Image 1: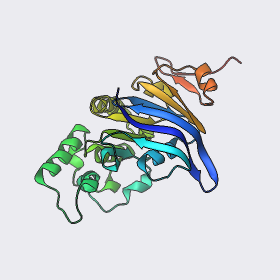
Image 2: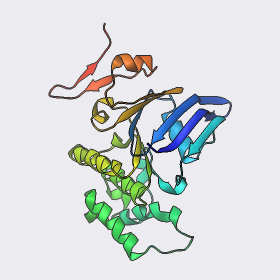
Image 3: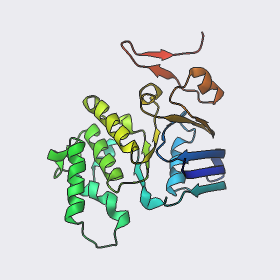
Image 4: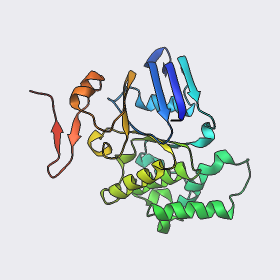
Length: 246
């Protein structure tokens, strides 16, 4: 299997405080990794290191052949405050191509067509000329997903993408991620283990350090062993929380 990035004894943080310590981690081509862990455990910090926004304080990050900033797509955590940009939905999606273009270069007809096709796939074709402030939270999330993937990245980073996904669109959203995983590697930060376990191929438990679990099946006992103090929600006819014996 092809390794597209590797962390060797990597540490990272802010100021004098490390959030991640001694992380050893390999990401293979076409993996779909659910990144889980408690708030403040270092999940977003992990993504920032991969993006090059945050430099390691120790160890090293090694990118595989052909992997750089231009081949990484990123969907950040979205808030309702992200709808204040005076741009149309189409313009926001096209902005995902700016890293590939020289300053002042216009978007081609093919690029605009690609953006329109993505909006149609994500159920947003009719909103292409709308302003972001006219969209719901779920629609806004889909716009930023389209921006993240328009450049056909080899690695897609998703930071809590389910936060605003409309209930009616949730299945289509995960179906779309499964389709994308056939073409790219995905790292998805999420708190909802019960939902994403049906879609991811493996887990990375992040809480200061990182423990890789090479399966989509994970138990509460394993979470405790990995120092990931989060609850496991089981979905079905009667959704319920799996707790330790009490």
